[in-house]
Image (cartoon, rainbow, N blue to C red; front, side, top):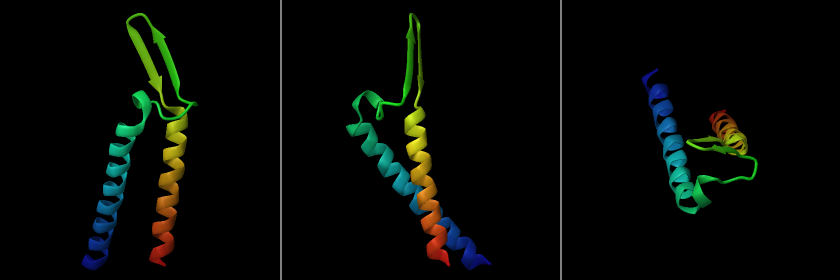
Length: 75
């Protein structure tokens, strides 16, 4: 039981490390924080609304793939 819990914690740490590195690299190389053309930006006087729709879809697909890979490797 303790061994399995330790593996889960290590896996979570590796996933967080990868996500952190990706976020740092996106911050350096993404122009103005807007990565994909499907992101929605509404600008009005005194208000800017930014909804990263395409970015959320890409991140969701990537995280789903990572979780699938982790579950596949655990078998």
